[in-house]
Amino acid sequence: MVSDFKFSEHFSFFEMTTTENRTLLEANRLVFSDKGKMARGILLCETILEPIRVHFNSPVSIHSAYRCEQLNTAIGGSKTSQHM
Image 1 (cartoon, rainbow, N blue to C red):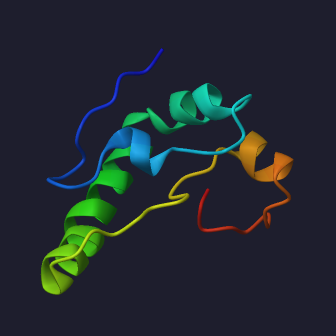
Image 2: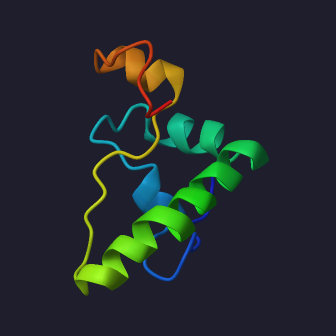
């Protein structure tokens, strides 16, 4: 099982990897826990999401930042989805 941690001040690993598909939730988090993928997630939070939140001084709700291939296929996502 993967533990939650902060990617940046206002965004967490669990938030970036959440899905309503509970059967693939843990698999999605395990795939994303690869160092290269996590580094890109941290970069997304630090360079795009945090500045947006700070600029508007308002929370930003993330509904799906990352989907592993298995999850993306299960929900009918595009094969070229930026979520992957």
